[in-house]
Length: 473
Image 1: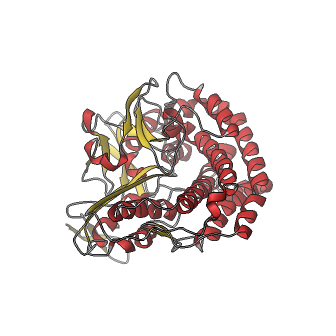
Image 2 (image 1 turned 90 degrees about the vertical axis):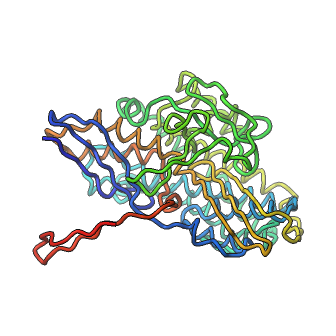
Image 3 (image 1 turned 60 degrees about the horizontal axis):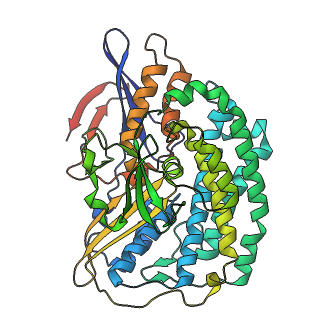
């Protein structure tokens, strides 16, 4: 008899979602879907607000990656003002963005994915968590906590507080930093590099034991999209968009992020509040692409820092052309963390970072502004249209997680077809399907910005749990 298997909720991800696995009369998996079930709608609630408020308001989208939204929003504001921001402000923004990458990736790897990687996909759920990790290797868990703490501390030192700092603004940033803050940042760098070498070594030692998962958790050809520097190196704050394919070829290069709407489209489906972006020349859903750590390492020719360069060269040898196995998001995440720490060290030694002039002053000079940067989960776009009074008339947020939506849906279907048997459902089978989603480290609160009317189902049950009435809209 045909049936539907539900994983509800999906665990160890940021936000709320469920997975539906559809099984035919013969008990075989026919398809699967990843449903994002929460709705927030920041695109609508910012309408009518002054664009100068946007960095502070947009940071509230997420407590894990507020810096990404502050930066993209501030850059859109820079464009509305028509200014070039001071060098010190640009260096501060870069520094804090690397700290954001570091702390967010540390949370994803050590807290959310490490239990699968080091305790095993089939370990009891009561043990397959950060507390189970603590019992086996408290020092390793502590290293992960310290790495996240380092990233958060940089954000606090520069921005004033760890979460939702009132720091970024159109035209630059609100305050300069001093020698004491710079010296504290420098003091933590050796420990961070040591911890990342330890984590990279440990992950590489266990990868061979996950050969089946590597093969069947999101292993398929797609496009890859991200930002690169003029030299083709990793770039997180300012650069041009590059799109590559599964064979390692460059499909499109030098794309202006301010013109993202000319080459990226956004579709919607009734089964999810999250949009489904795609590469326009290939249409929907054919224009499937991936963003984030895996994509960035695939499209960049090098990292631009010595330790990460060596790791990146080795990483690229794991694929024939591009590395298409989504399981290797975990390894890519660690390499990006290493690159972030090296970049933080370089910026801490840059004299421009300490300059006092941190904000350009100007009035509104444009009615349309777009800001883009690389968030931990991939390329982020903020797009604002304002009236003559600087009030937001329309906002579009193209979130990194939503750009992976098509790939995440294909991943859960591939994983379900291979691992799930309706004849004898085991917890480890379903955990592998969830683990396919965790490869992408989705931030679902960031990405739920639907258009049209939201649909709701209200169930009324009695004390015994019997369904009395169902209301749908």
